[in-house]
Length: 196
Length: 196
Image 1 (cartoon, rainbow over the protein chains, first blue to last red):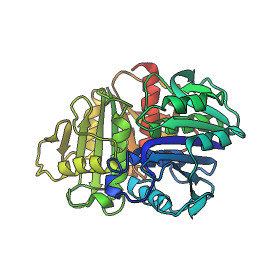
Image 2: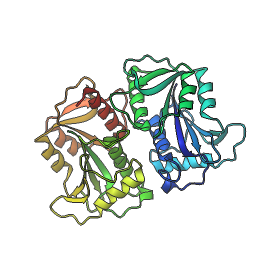
Image 3: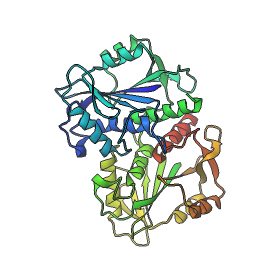
Image 4: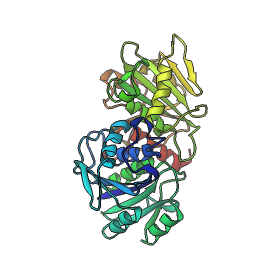
């Protein structure tokens, strides 16, 4: 299983945004939406071995986490607008303590970044993508691996501390810094080449 | 210079489409729009050494080619909607024989796929991305290289013949077939790693 956790520091945590304004009023939700495309789409199919956690930290209803499971997801198309509508449906749900299913393969909870990575670290190797890490092409990964990424802002020092306390692998993808959705594509290609 | 040529077999060649319908009525223009994002965006800057040609073959006004030049382009944001608006502005121009500038770094012409790759082949190495090609990580590229991609349809046999007549390098990106915009990200990462 390959997992991606993406932190949206200002991303809308409720569904009252316009699909025309995901890059503005919805707190750069567009970045997280593109990460969904990157995580799941092959040319003619959906990656069934992938899962993504989008941690929404913007707005008064934060935190919320939208989780998408490749082996279950339906109605997913590659364009930003229709994917944004699926995520908005999830954020419109009246979620309380327990994770709820919004549509096939799409779940929403009140989990924080801490909740998400702490739980995942019990069963998956956590990888922190950072400029000064080990080249991803030279790193070794177990079968169950979780890559942590951030939106257009770096992780806060508190998030960084939380993540580093889990003893993550630190990896980089090349000489430049890339958008989160581009990072996911590069990682997927690297894992594809290994036959993971 | 790294160049990308993307063929949109049904992509709108005139500007009378809605930004809400790029994946539908505009003939999968959404794919070409995402290719623009992939070609140009680094985390904190635009790639000045990149250029993309989008060949629009849908509708009665086809063919048209929208060319975007990284060293000149302005007003480019990563979301599909705002990039779609820039391309629509170009397709709304009353273009005749000569290429016209729509906004800084964005040009439109009546060039066909044949016109585009024939002209480029005089000064750039053409690379055809295909499943059975040489692994891109093992291929050698000159400084000026042009990668040819297609939208959700393969190149037609006529387009394939035209391209193959130019003696292209044939490369593949891994064990799976990817969307055109994902291919561009993988190629950009590979060239970044070489310091090209």
